[in-house]
Length: 140
Image 1 (cartoon, helix red, strand yellow):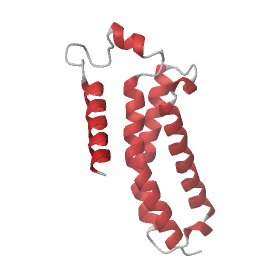
Image 2 (image 1 turned 180 degrees about the vertical axis):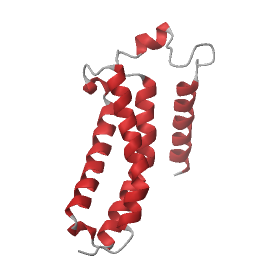
Image 3 (image 1 turned 180 degrees about the horizontal axis):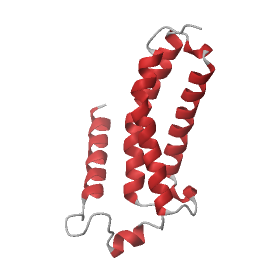
């Protein structure tokens, strides 16, 4: 168990160093030639993928909390709430898949990808209201 924990810590440290390395001598958002060669996606940046991952890290536990509360308080009978929760689930699933395989974004423009990231942030911002609503007992 200790070896597994140490291995995980080494992996996290290595990934952190790789993510932060080489950024202090260039403008924000610019990639060095080596980085550009290592990143084959022309319209999807590492920063955009990281932004999606950051949102997903916060969004998934909020979604799980909302589902638990909705089930506990009878909201599975409310069609709109079920649709909202299903939409959030699909967004989480699509975000994970897209972040793992950026080529699946296809020929999306950088600007459209920025809007995509912004929409994920909007969904994240709406989760506290959804959680507050499903925290109450559902009444028809």
